[in-house]
Length: 416
Ligand code: GLU
Image (tube, rainbow, N blue to C red; front, side):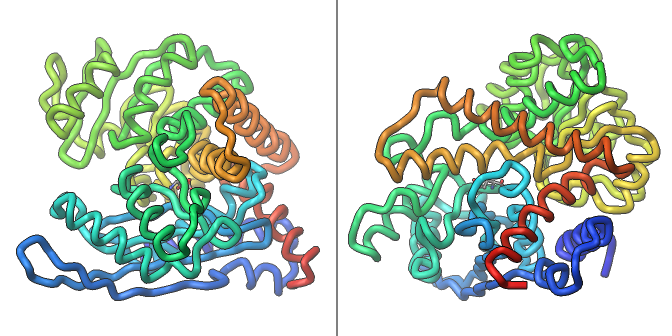
């Protein structure tokens, strides 16, 4: 398989961790595969009366530590292998932040940019009619991911409650506040990543308040990282940002709040006043202190890893770096905060959302931030402690922390 098949990558990463941990053969083989997966054929009546057929998936990768948990992606390039990889990464993600959940992921191969609001609502409801019986607060709990929104979560919740006939807000997270969402869920992924950067900077003795940073991918995670980085770290200069249409660069620095406004008004970062155009590839290779890959998987490979000049790379995207690139970055001394640690803030606040739904009492924003900070800081330090004992790159170290927790739960249950 090519360097870029995400599920082959996920398995290869696990293989390395299993070998380092001396995992027994059965546990290793068990953890290489999803426990369950569903494939759906979804008919959708378009606004013009024509019916189109879409492919949908849900992968429940591992539920040893709790109900499976993970987002839903609506993307034209979605395949079962992407969903499997993302579901595996969710398993390691919930384990590394030590929340009592397993890992899952779902998706529909579609281009939401070409769907009307009405079509999106019908597609969301069709998907829930297909997968609904496999979901629930004690089974499997979806959430937003690439190109899915709180509004889509609300339609899904509504369809699910029609199916089961009672209120069940914890069956999905990332909901709008009006239907049981949590304070602080919107920026949680980016916030958790910046907390990790803060801890890494302390450990590495980097003065982040004067640091430069760049953001590849200006969706939900990237936009919030742009504004939260200086807020949480007490300063910093945004040199560049990019999205699927192109990027912008200014050596004097870009005002992150104004750039977010421009993105929301025009749909892209391009043509932001006072900046020069830059490609996504050039942005990744910029001389910056902190680089946030915040778009899709497979952007840092053996082809460009040697050109990465960032001191710290905080992976807000899932799977941006291939195993070949990891080795090169490690040799070069780039300090990687691996995806399933760096972007675990999203699922952590999703878990808080479920907890609030279950006892039907809602926390203040300050409480969410405090609890999230504690979870992310503990997770970062668990990985840091392990890295002192192991000469390995951070992703492998984080895998060792997460895989040993999942393996222990599988064993205690008597599965392997
Ligand atoms: N889609 C997000 C992730 O990849 C959040 C998942 C969740 O909240 O369940 O971590």
